[in-house]
Image (cartoon, rainbow, N blue to C red):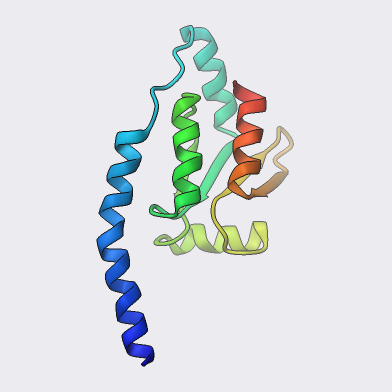
Length: 128
């Protein structure tokens, strides 16, 4: 019975993964167009951020779409397939849960923010 359940969900993921990724591409809004100087300033601020994510996680997709809408160049770190990023997420944030935004301040201190709604609210407040 366990085998059947595992195979069912594995098959379901194989079917849904390309659909979810295609939907992300088709439904992502155009990014904000800014003056080059302002965009460069925002790009510098974005270097202090990193999003730990799973490629097909619906909540991660939601955050990535908002990042594109705000024209943010935030580093994406795959915590599902990259063991180094997974370990960094576990050590820094305390749990392997995505999405997670790592915010590093000027002193090098990191804050780990979970929950897609909180991340989106933070990005809108800081960059919109």
